[in-house]
Amino acid sequence: MIEVSEWDMRTMEGVKRFKEIRAKSLPSIAMEDEIVYSSIIPGQEILQGEILKRFQNNNPTQIIQL
Image 1 (cartoon, rainbow, N blue to C red):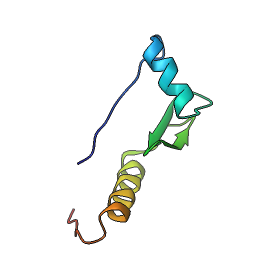
Image 2 (tube, rainbow, N blue to C red; image 1 turned 180 degrees about the vertical axis):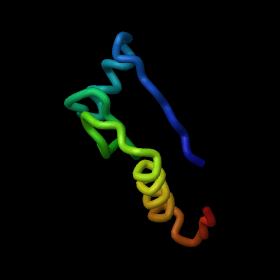
Image 3 (cartoon, helix red, strand yellow; image 1 turned 30 degrees about the vertical axis):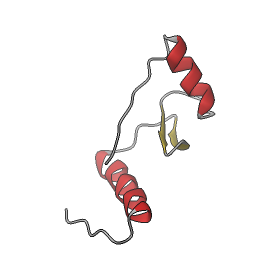
């Protein structure tokens, strides 16, 4: 299962999460509490590739067909 969360930096919760993941700039994308993209929004294919790579690393016995 993939869970997507978005935090608003205008809220205390957003600021708290920004600090928790040690982001340095906006926009930032973290996966598994690790900053993967900072100051950029990657293209859809690049983002899908990173998600797929991490899913396969966490689920080595499952085969994904796109």
